[in-house]
Image (cartoon, rainbow, N blue to C red; front, side, top):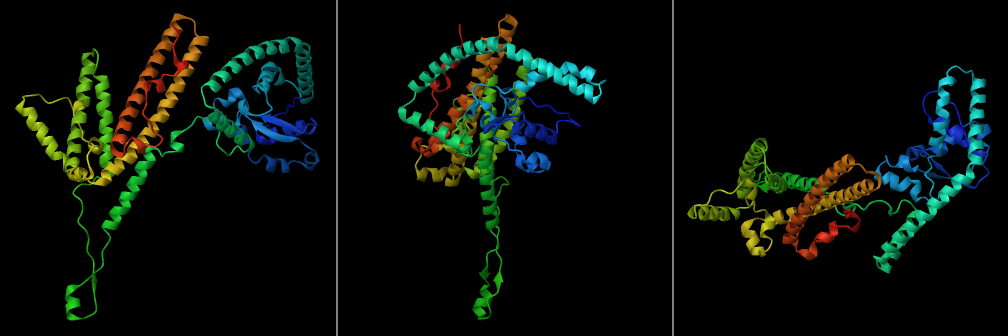
Length: 466
């Protein structure tokens, strides 16, 4: 059943509500799935808007409504919104894409030119004739269209069955039961875990930014307590036996304006800059690129000098190590290494030491804060790596299915190659962060973060054809 209505000014809810309610009241069904390109917003307060309709309409019975996003329009929505609302995951909808109204517009759009010169009566008659022709042609072509859809469905069913068997063979029966339960629970209550939403590491572990914020908040509270006045009795009044007068006393201030969290973050950012330099310095470089490398080295060197000043205060035990290294280098007449090859000596570099040896290097709080920040780093990098792997799989499938000419395939190959470099970068960064976390807390205490192997990022469906 098709409902049409005029719009006074844009696609307003009141027009859509009137047309939808009128059509639903004449269908005589118990349950109907309504799809709309903005259904995630449209369904909000739908009942309140229906209650505001004229009494002549409100007395009509309408079926129970289910809501969904059309497949094509759902792709431009947020990932969480699409996974929750798309008709691809709705029960009872089948494999429809719910884009039927868009195909009707294709038929009706040519009428717009003559519509401008028509009176309302002629306009309604013209639309009715056009819709009658559309319905007539659709009915007489049902045989061809249904046969074509049946052939496609049979081929697609074979693909889906083979894919289902391959996935089932790769998991344990317990895991399959667990996944099935998650799907069943979500179908009964969509507020529970969505099985079609890509898993987010940050849903289990806070992101690095949130951990930074929490650590800075704790340090601010500690600094406020350290500078809070302490109440002490006045000695002269105590000796004289008079009433105790209270005086205030403040603790000494630290020698630097940066906090322990800021110091760890500065070291982690310096590590990233060094890693970028090591990656970009290789290969044959033009004179201009070599000049930019030297400029970046100069900027990183200045940041390293500032970091060393903070390190002498927060990690006094590192000073002896740096002085011994400098003495050995001078005795062996070795040149200064490039700044990107310089060892920073973060707290995680001393993870194999005992508690007594730790105390000689720095305080235990530095190790705890770096461990917390490394956990956040691991979670963020894993999230980024997962997204890039999914993007590469999509690009490969799209290229193999749709691109044929040399120009298009070459351009796609460059894009996939660039994405592969980003995947390698994320893989290297995760391994570095995981090794730093393991050095501090031990592999058993890393929790959900595991060692990343080559097989973990080399998925079977990412193999490029010869």
